[in-house]
Amino acid sequence: MKSLFYICNALDDSTRLERGIVTDSPAASGKIFHVCKALRGADVRSMVISMGRGRQDNSGRYFQSKVKRVNGITVIYLPFFHYPILSELLSLVSIIPILWRLRSGKGVKVSLFYNRMPVYFLGLVMSKVLRFRTILDLEDGEITITKWSLSNFKSKMLTGIFDMLCTDGALLACSALEKATKLRPTICCYGTSEVRSTTIGKNTLPQVSILFGGTVSVDTGAQLLIDAIMFLREQGFPWAKNIQFEISGKGDSIIEFVTLAKDNRKPNVIVHGRTTDNEYRQLLARTQVGLALKPNSGVLAHTTFPSKVIEFASHGILVVTTDISDVREVLSDGAIYLVEDNVQNLVDKLHWIAKNREEANDLALKGKRNIAETCSPKIVGKKLKQFLFDAED
Picture (cartoon, one colour):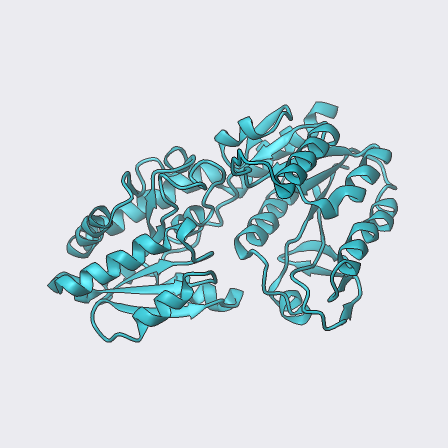
């Protein structure tokens, strides 16, 4: 039996709320659970070992480890203590007995580590001691810093440790990340597409609902959207009255969208903030256009992959995205691309969508088909199983 232990910080909604965690990444958690589900469909025993942690609030609250099922996947949550330093130490050592108990049983075992995190160190060492295959899931590349600093030194040291101990290769969020690690072999994993039936009549609704979500900051394109909304309001284009922007998630730029939402001029802006999983699913069900606006010239353009484009496309949502990372390779001709980071470029694309509803819907369906052909759970599960395990066969 082939077994995968996905060591990460994935969280389901109820555990996040129970532990009072506000610094998690819903996109990362979703990708992890979906990848495990795809591997389970390929006859791999997939299990998530989650740190179950976030920023401490100094309350001294303690949460014991627990096991639960999330979307059919077994998740072991390590204990969490709301107190600095002691919290990190607890997470560091508590993974050791978990891996020791999982050592029994026949078959190849793989420990897959989500990004390079100091809190994984003893888990990485224990995996080597137990002779598990050790693989890095590299989702975010390091931003180049030429000036010496303690944080830069720690980052380089951490990179060296993981490159030394993850001896069986790396999963990469995008092809450019191959330059960010010495690990070989490598394979790109963009996540999986749970293709949903598109809501009938979504493109006939009186308004075009446009969603911008996730981390809402300058680095993810928030300022470009803010400037575009202000421009549309100043110009008063008649077609812009038929579009509505909905903002979900959290980040430094949320407050600016809240200010825009208080202004009654068209186009409308609605700010949801951080939503539950169920609330977000309802939001996706009525969304027609999804924005992925990490700047082409930004620091994140080639250090990660905007997984929201797969989520949007799989729900039949038209993706408007900057031309970064491997997005064009994945979506091909099933999306609208912004090749320049300027307001007029974005406004022109929105104008076309508002004036060509049927053509825009057809393009969204093309994106949905493209995603289904490249990121279906069956295809991803088979590909990852071969990469993770077949070298041992």
